[in-house]
Length: 138
Image 1 (cartoon, rainbow, N blue to C red):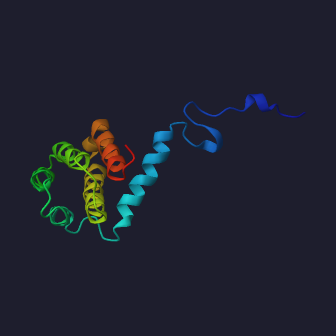
Image 2 (cartoon, helix red, strand yellow):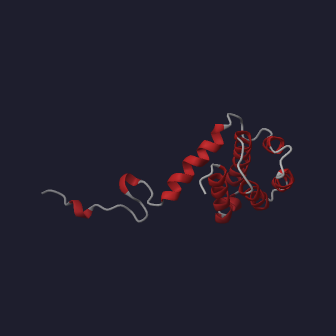
Image 3 (spheres, helix red, strand yellow):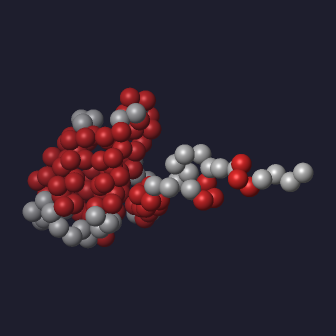
């Protein structure tokens, strides 16, 4: 007796070979990995200092300083909103992209360590959008 191929089906939301059907997920995950590891530094060491330094002399510096302060106070959504504004204001240099990666890494760590933050879908969406904008994908 031969099993029928018609009885085999993938769970809802899963495509061929077990990959998610959502193409955005396939784009965002590699982008986040690229940003987190492209700088070659520990994302915890001086992320806010490097971010501020990378925007020295830039018109966006004031928003970066405000974003750093919000980050240090644990106001991650406020920090990400300000960083979205910075990224949307113009082209980033490689140094600025790497500094953004450091901040995203720090926010990811905070989310991972706090169960309440890890359930915050808006925060996750803001991080994903920031990564995409930093890489110039949106």
